[in-house]
Length: 355
Image (cartoon, rainbow, N blue to C red):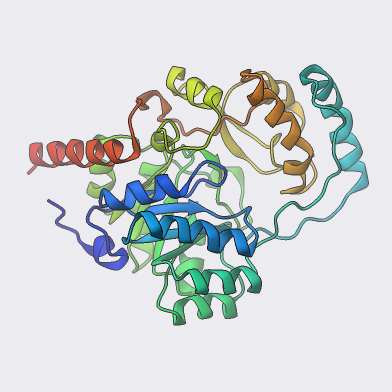
C-alpha cells in the first residue's frame, strides 16, 4: 500500500516505520520484534561500551535476520564547572534523602560521544543502519561507516540542521518535532523561536533537502503516519508507542504512568540529564523546573541516576525520568509486533479514505 517506497528500499524494510532507538528502553527483543513485523528495529546504544554494542547486536541478530539500526549520541564533551556542580548537588540532596538513595554521586561523564572505538564495534556488528542524535561524528568516522555499506541517519530539529546533515552525507534526515519524547536532537545554535512542531517542520525540511525525510514526534497511530506521508515524509519514526510494550525495559511504574497519561501532562526538563528532554510531569520535574543552570550533559545523568533508580524500584513515579512524547494519550497495552501491525492497518485505512 506504500506508494512512496524510498525509505523501504533504502532501509530494506517492508513498512516505512522506524521503531525509535530509545537508550535505556530498547532491547534486542523489541528491535527484533519490530524488524520481524516489517519495520526498522532499533537499539539505543548511546550508553554502551564497545563490547556491549557488539553483544546487543549479536543478541538481536539471533532473533531476526532483518534490518537493524544502532543509534548513538554525538554530543560535545562536557566541561566541568564546580559552581554548577555544587549548586546541582545542593538541589538534589533533599531528593536523595526523600528517596533514601544515599549520597549524591559525583558529576562524571558516564558515556562518551561516538568515537573510533564505538565505530570499530559497529563495523564488526555490521547493522543495516546507524543513526545519530545531536548531529554527526567526525567526517572521517562517518566515511568509515558509509564505506562499509551502512546507511546513515541523523535527527534535525530545524531546516538549518537538516541542510547541515544532508551536506555531510546522511542518507535520510529524521525531522524531529517539538512534540517528541526524550531528548531533543538540536545541535546548531538557535533561538527559542526556531523550535517547530512536527507537522510544521516536516514539509519545510522536505522542501530543503534532496534525501528522504522521516517524521518524528507526536506520531502514535495511523492518522499521524498518514498525515506525515501527506506532508512529503518518506516514513516515520515512533518511540512512545513502544515504551508500554512487554519488550520495553523501562520500569513498570514508567509504563503505568504512560498508560494513564493524557498527553496534556508532559513537559521539557533539563533536570534529569542536563539537556532538554520531554517527560510526563512528576514531582521532581515540576520542582526542578525553576533550576536553569545545570552542569553540562551528560554529567547530570550520573548525578541523578541513583535517584531515578530508587524512585522506580519503590514503584513511585516521583523522580523517575518518565520519557514520553505528546501523543502518549494514544498509548495501548500491546506487544511490539502488535503495535507495528496496528500502525500499518490504521495507516492503510486512512490512506484508503483519501485515495
